[in-house]
Length: 357
Image 1: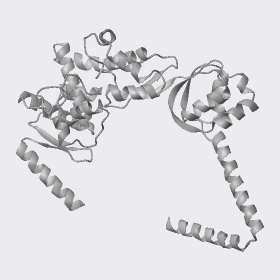
Image 2 (image 1 turned 180 degrees about the vertical axis):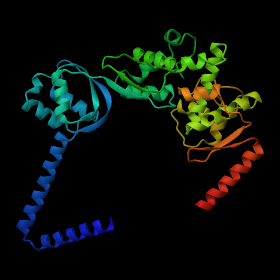
Image 3 (image 1 turned 90 degrees about the vertical axis):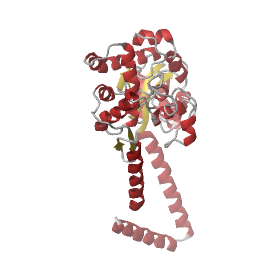
């Protein structure tokens, strides 16, 4: 790598010396030529090289011009140049045939492909991935960015008692915990209620057999399992630690100890638009039913939509006497049976970190 840079530096140095020996007129011509080359290159880049954007639904209204459409697509990052969109639409006479409707844009597409999609009126499916461990708040942000509906529309459905009961069969306060993390494909004409209904249906599909095989006796027990599973989902980075983390929280509940879970506090901060990599001591004192540092028992709802592996971890936890754990900042956790052991392991961990640093 160093030799490559050295050769490059030598070549640039040689070219600079040659450039200095030229007369003023030739220097000017070279500078103009280089500028023209880069300008033309950038325009070709804007037209031919595909732009990358997250898939989103774009609604093109009847009567909108190529200029208006191009500006909107550029604003969304779907194309690089609104100007060249307008120019190509005129040159190819596509501006006469741009069809209104809902279109799915995103992925890797260049200007010609984007223009052809609107001209042909073809509308494809929309692919949306909801990662594990997201709350409804973050899930609705992803869905809203896709253009399906606004964040407010999703939130309205999420607080609609009739809609919630229709989807879950129970009178829960929200759909928190029931929007299964998965990659979904929707049509460009999909509505907010049908999206949430499909996500709840996916939750049922993934978890129905798990709950059926368990010894749970009531929907309330199922919901409590879901709440605990959502905490495990947010605590665990590696899959094989989920049963261990589940055992900690179940052991604490059995001993009437507070859960003292950081993700539950993070959840209530998220509702206030606050994100912290590490919680502050003052955060642990916030009065809220979600603050498991000051309230015994479970929070009132799940704090995210857990995966099936987190639910299985609660229903089939590891057999341990662990009551404490802390993260090693590498994705794993260090577990302890007592508070004294917990403090000792934290002290040893900090000493080791100082030695390594």
